[in-house]
Image 1 (cartoon, rainbow, N blue to C red):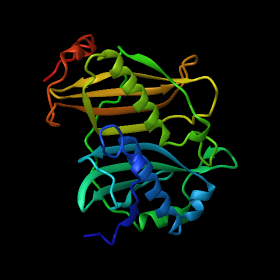
Image 2: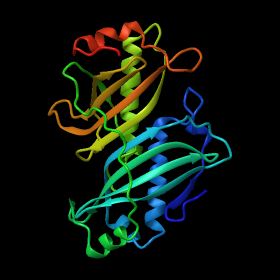
Image 3: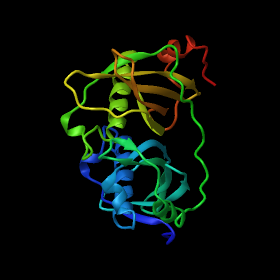
Image 4: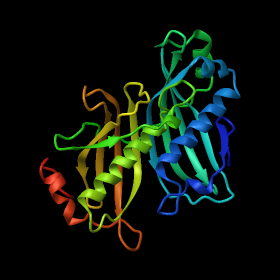
Length: 280
């Protein structure tokens, strides 16, 4: 049953949203959140905020079940979960065929596009947001520090990755981290990369990323290890100057032939042994 105190957005699922595993790719979920968030802003009294500028500073996405695209849209329910002086947070629950398939959180800040700087919420904006405030529990914490042992993968930026504000859209960072992670796993497990599913992925945005011909970089390493899962921390960087544009944490579960969680491949052991990590 739809909660009337929440904003509801029905997001169509496209055939092209499927990945090699036959379900909606994890990076597309953030695109769906963006569509729901924009729909919420445009349909309410805060439409002017979107026009003047709103930047996302953080995402947390928890995947509870895979989704296969069909004629049934994904139902996204969202609400305001916190309001500060210069930021606000949104919480989401995602449903497909009335099954809860995911939860998410987004932190956003108002931005003055003309002045090119962050700004505080106006009294009217803060009042409107607080009038829709619903207390929400936090998602479980995950590691955020990049391990000492890590690798760097080139990260090209496409012209089409830019949004209407003229910089790389927040959604595209998930693509960059995904491409780097797949390239890394393919290199360290050339014989049997295995099947991995994302069950959690957070992204914290630290600086705006612009288009350029030379690739940026993604450095990543294993931050935690379980019996069937690994936690990878990644940073989108400018390789020469070391500028960090975003930091991501991804929890991956290794699947066996029966599509159930399976023990990690032994070939991965050297990646965490260096940092003193061990499989539980």
